[in-house]
Amino acid sequence: MADVLNEDQKLLKATAAEFVKKECPTSRLRRLRDSDDADGFSRDLWVQMAGLGWQGIMIPEGYGGLGLGMTELACVLEEFGRNLVPEPMLSAACLGAMPVVLAGSEEQKTELLPGIADGSLLMTTAYHERGARYEILPVATRATPKNGGWILEGEKTLVLDGGSASKLIVTARVDGSDRDANGISLFVVDAGTPGLEVRHQSTMDLRNRATVELREVEVPDSAMLGDEGCGEEILRRTLQYATAGLSAELLGNAEGAFALTLEYLKTRKQFGVLIGSFQVLKHRAAELFTEIELTRSAVAGACHALDTQASQAEALVSVAKARASDTAVLAGYEGIQMHGGIGMTDEHDIGFYAKRARASELSFGDAAHHRRRFAELSGF
Image (cartoon, rainbow, N blue to C red; front, side, top):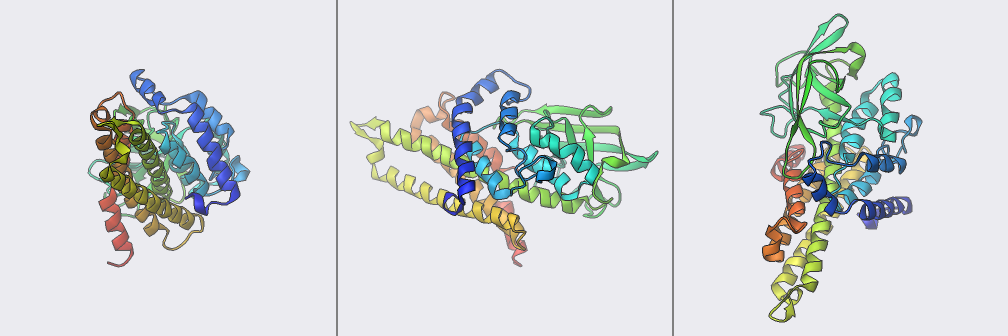
């Protein structure tokens, strides 16, 4: 990605790399895991990141953001992936902010976006339901009108950073059957609303995920984002940004795993010589380098397409996610193999990269799903 960035974007990326390297070493991830921290990230660091403007990168300037695009956010998320940073940037900047940017009323934007930008409000979208796998549908959660407001009933699973969010954007059906694309609306729900239960889910990549149950959760009509029954398109566009952002994280993940592996190849000796001098390991390292560079181009293309609202943006996002998923998983597994026995232990960080890559591959659609999606969008 670096070879297509302008000077401002390069500066942003360099600033993110310097901050992450200093404040967010991968060793911190192990400490957070062992402390059984409920958030799984540092609130103090989150505020510092807000001071750098990262949460508000894609929020318009009039609402406290920087008014930039997906390419700039990807610069930050790539560095997050490189050091496995657990702070919920993807949730805040994409899943939290973008539905409001895309469909919120002036009152909703004024109320919500400044808080996301300054780090005081953590918001994410709860959309995934059991049996949906990688698709938006079915949506079985129901919204029933009552007394000028709505009653929400249903369940959401694998809600990214749902356990730490103070507000959730919930998808619910106002009309039609579970698999109808029409009749879905988005509602902003306070985490403390009566009838809303959030249960933490443990995952192998140590990200904060949650199951959200809604039992007669009452929200006012003003909680609805966008027009009634038109939430599917808003959610689909939001997930394009989130998927591109996760692809940038996966690129950084692959780069971080590759850097660890190269360092090991240059220092570990067998039979009196550096293992990095073995031809077969050189070939494997060269192949991985090539895959990372191809992924960089795919991610850059997807982000540029989103920023320019190109007609092929959705297809290019699928290309980026498929490529980034394969590359990050390959980098993690190759890293473990080339590290040998120590790579299989919790003592070494390479295992964290492999776990994060595997879990991220399955988020927002795995490589096979996005290849099928690309084929469908291309008319095959």
